[in-house]
Length: 468
Image (cartoon, rainbow, N blue to C red; front, side):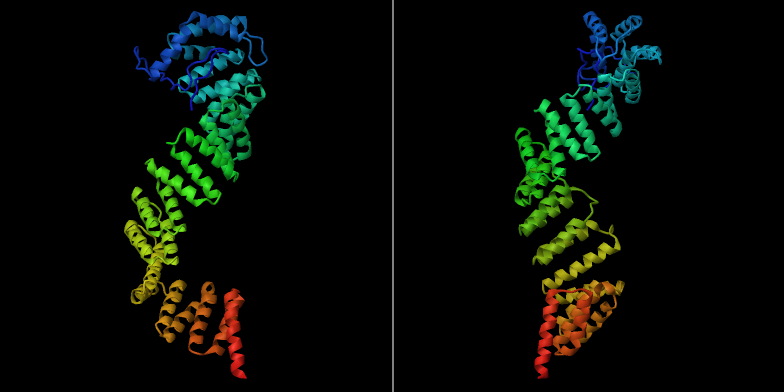
């Protein structure tokens, strides 16, 4: 946001105009061009009544405005006359007049013109000088805060905007800019207070309401965020950023269906992103709409090449775990094509393991075993693959092979507990209860689980019964 700074108390230049280009001298500028803006500035200064009132305003007796000394009135009049015909020349003329002893009015005016000429660094320099010369210069602080915020000098902007409010310049725009500055510092409590004050003074400004909604959302006040966003959407339903924040608030309230509606509205507006579509697909999985979830994940992949595949890969694992191996397989195959050769070894191995799990879930045991054998050929110490392949052989009535694989996995700390449980289950199936007990006890020492405790208790009871 760029505002043209004030050159008098009572008269302002057009708001939100684009800065003029000092090198441009188009005698007949196109409407809305930088040249047209400069022409508008010159036209204002060409009005003798304006120049007279501007000078009179500088002499208003006020603690918030420096007086323009009588010795400098003629110089300011000269600058005003010059700005009416050539604002660039007026800038350089005024720059030569500003000294350590000149009035703060000159520094303020030079800073204002510098900003208009797209020289923000110089504008800030002269506005800062104006506040040093006249510490209560309200307008200088207000305009300086705006420039500092645009420059990314957030701490300085907060000081300047706060000072202007302390001096009585607390209008809606100043409070709103202060809220924006606090948001960039992630001080959401202070930002909330600033935006609420801004809305008291400018209740119809959507930027301040959106800023407030973001602040209260970051403070987990989801219900209030929903209320604010619904009001904004009622006024401007075609803003995808409004729907996105509303979706996030609904998710915070654990209302996934309402959030899905918001993501679908973003899609209808033609503003979907890979992230919004993936979030929508995640909700479809939660609601057990697996075919639509897969379709939406695939649409998200189509939107942009080179995306990370972590979320859809995790979704494929979840789908398989939820008893939807067919849908998981469709998504996994597409991910393999999408990733191509641009995939790291760990992720490639993860995809192979998932492929084996999907094949197993679909009853394709031979295919599953072949994939696991391939993984172990490349990495003989892959604990997950050892356990999965061991389970395959256990189900295939090949206990020796299964136990061999489980014993290899038992040698790895991360997999020891699960491997001993699997090993014990094979022994129990073979009727070797006494050999299974120490394995289960050791597994419980490593990682205690109620289900394993009950299993162990049943086996020990059975052994006692046999001993009688």
